Length: 278
Picture 1 (cartoon, rainbow, N blue to C red):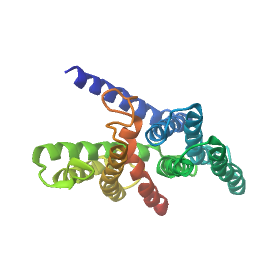
Picture 2: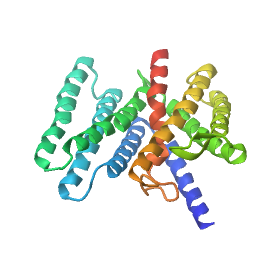
Picture 3: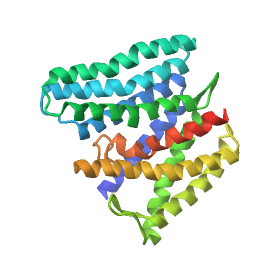
């Protein structure tokens, strides 16, 4: 019972913070996702990099900073701190490429036994976590319009899909979906997640009128398909390093990466669809 209350308390606090971050302005929204991206990167490198010496810990910090470069650049553009597209390209070139190649220099002098494995994981963290969170700003900032409710809707749909799949799978799930990676997931559960996701997509369209109902339904399909894949990808990661949770920041729920694994995988596809419409 104590564990259930701990999970419930964490969930309530988490939801309140997320909703407040979406409704208290552009700066708060950006800082919230900056913290989430940094936390996910920190946990990812905690799983993938060896952390025995001071040099290993410096590598972890470098990996987090590298992963945050795309987010910082897009945030500066979205918030209007960079207004000239040519200036944005110039600043991105000055910051991004040298930063990427600086990690090669660090590995050259780090005396690591597996320097290119470290480089591969740092660059993977950049694309797996850093780029999706940078794309969140492209969804939320539409010219002079701030459309954070679309991002909040995607988060809600991701949670609904996960919960719907879990409940349906427990009730009627029989056919394994991907037993090699996640033995408890079933096809019935996944289809239940799709159903609930589409229902809530329609309900969201009644409240969040930034986009019409048809587009919300398509986003619901995107979430239900790629959110499930994102969850499997993180399960594959945790299974490969033999851990249950990515961290312990959220009592009863694991780490930030555990909570945002599906969302991370949803964002690139949702952003591509939304930016295509715009």
